[in-house]
Structures are given as structure tokens and as C-alpha cells.
Amino acid sequence: MIKLAKLNNRPEIFHSIQGEGKNLGKPSVFIRLSLCNLYCKWCDTDYTWNWVGTNYVHNNSVRPGYQKFDKDEMIALLTDEEILDTLSDFNCDNIVITGGEPLIQQKSIIPMLTLMHERNPDFHIEYETNGTFVPMSELDALSHQYNVSIKLSNSGVAYEDRICPEAISYFANSPKSNFKFVVDTESDLQEVQDIIDQYHISNKVVYLMPQGSSIDSLRQKQQWIVEVCKQYNYNYSDRLHIYIWGDKRGV
Ligand SMILES: Nc1nc2[nH]cc(C(=O)O)c2c(=O)[nH]1
Ligand code: SF4
Ligand SMILES: [Mg+2]
Image (cartoon, rainbow, N blue to C red; front, side, top):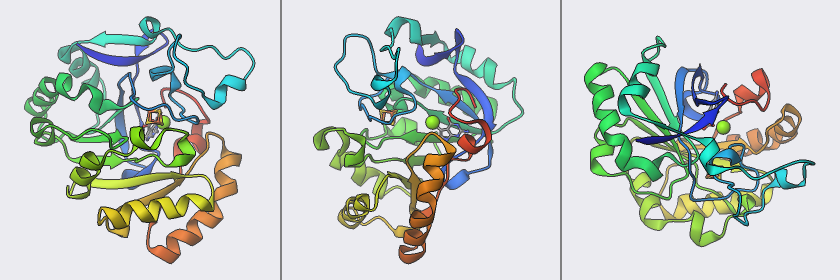
């Protein structure tokens, strides 16, 4: 069984456009898996990991009425077949497997990927991953693109939790990878530079994306981030879905 995030009592599988990174604008079906091994303070999917009884601190904690999530209530268990059935409702080949951190469940999703490939060899499978797990060879053989978002210190996550040298080396050496860094202030740039230098990542596969879940917070950072992208030949990524729908789930 595969653990998906639950939205309105239904598994969070939705048809939208890719709002971030290399495939921005591409019609895509998103499969949102539950669970994450990290605890970013600005995470917009805290309902996949900030469970009752944990002591993670999230920016939302200061909002009146914020409550941590009941793990049982927030997870939908699905079979491969059930997920495949849902995918067949959409006329869409680009599949984004996201989370949470989807590679926590990599072993469980390999049979689903096999089935997907059998049903439709044109499916293009991409992942939104935090870059702390090495993909298994069986998963890699059925996958096309890794959008690797290594977390910086602005996430509030401890260095040893967010930086996994073995996994970063794997992704740095895979032609399927691009690297999407969530940046907040100019002081984040040195960390980006240090990572890409250390792992010999080409600037051409780097995307800088502003941190923010509102149009205002994204807009405030656009100009300086674009100037940095021009200077270093990084790519700029916005968060198009926020402009279109705001900070909503399932879009
Ligand atoms: N439209 C849209 N694009 C996205 N790209 C990455 C997303 C994610 O939450 O991983 C996401 C998302 O939630 N919605
Ligand atoms: S790695 Fe991604 S899903 Fe996990 S806490 Fe950070 S932003 Fe959220
Ligand atoms: Mg998101």
C-alpha cells in the first residue's frame, strides 16, 4: 500500500500545471505522497509530517488555532491499481510524484511505476525530492526527472539532516537531475555556491526559486533573484500556482 496525503477525505492526486522549475507550465498530474524526513519551518505541506506529539517548530505554529496533524487522519492508503485508475481519469502523460518526501516510499512505489510503464510507456515521471535518499536502481530505471531541492539553512533543518553527501553525489551525477534551491535572502547564495562547487553541479541545471506562499512574498524577492540568475547563469523559477490559485491545496 502507498501512503498518500489526504485532501477532503480523498487521496491528493490532482491535475494542474507544473508551477515550479524546469517544466513550469506543463500540464501534469500530481501524486502527493505523505511523510517527510525533514521539517522545514516554511513547508507548505506540513500536513504530510507535522504530526501531533512531535516537537518540530513550523512558522504556522504562531497562527491562531494552528494544530499539529493527526497522522491517521491525514494519510490515505492506496493500492497501485487504485492510483492507476485515478490517473486514467486525466488525459495527461506528465506525472509529478511529490510529497512530503516521495522517496521515503520508493520501495513501495516501484510496482506502481512498473504498472504505469506497462499501461502507458509515454508516461514521463518526475519527482519533487529533497535530495536525501539515493534512488534504487529499479526506481531509476522507470523514472525520467528528479527535481532535487536540497534544503538550505533557511529551512531551519539541522545540517546533518538536510545534507546527505551520498544522495547529493548520486543526483549530481545523474543526467535526469535539476537542482531547485529555495532562497530567502542574499545570504543563502553562498550556501548554494558551496554545494554546487563541492558536487560539481553545472549552473545550467540550477534553479533559484523564491521562498513564499503568497504573491507579495514572492514578488519581493523576484528582482534580486533574477539579477543573481543573470550574473551566474542560473535559471529563475517562480511558483506559478501561487499566482494563479494562492496557497491552496490540490492545485
Ligand atoms: N501546480 C503545482 N506545481 C507544483 N510543483 C511542485 C509542487 C509541489 O508541491 O511539490 C507543486 C504543487 O503543489 N502545485
Ligand atoms: S523537505 Fe519538502 S516536504 Fe519535507 S519539510 Fe521540507 S519543504 Fe516540506
Ligand atoms: Mg507545493
